Length: 139
Image (cartoon, rainbow, N blue to C red; front, side, top):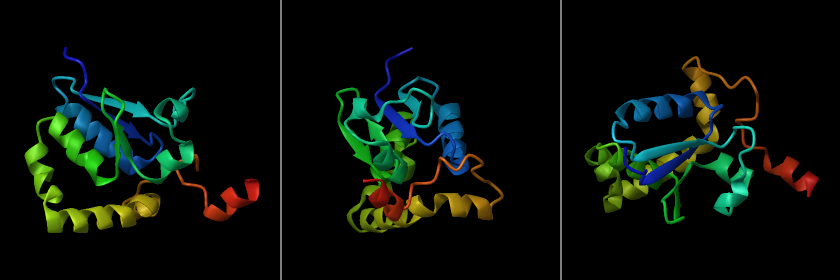
């Protein structure tokens, strides 16, 4: 098995996120895509130079050299790693990039609510990004 060329940092308690991870994992025949659950016990976001809040806000991915990408670029890279880069390639074209990036920015904070509409839920509550007010009060 070859070394991974892209690692997806995912919210393991988000039902929609898990569904996507399972899908990608089935296609990951060559092991080029690695997965890391940011809700796993012992996960330390500092190894990536970020915070748990940042990681919970939007999806992130990392290359072996430490470069990090986030939002839609993560999906483009993850699909490329499993051989389906062509499927999301149009989302990187100028006008479509802007539209899909804005769409993801709307989706990310609403992913739990959207999941509930499709019968999926987050039981633990840890898969919800803390509201800005709570963050300010704790500071």
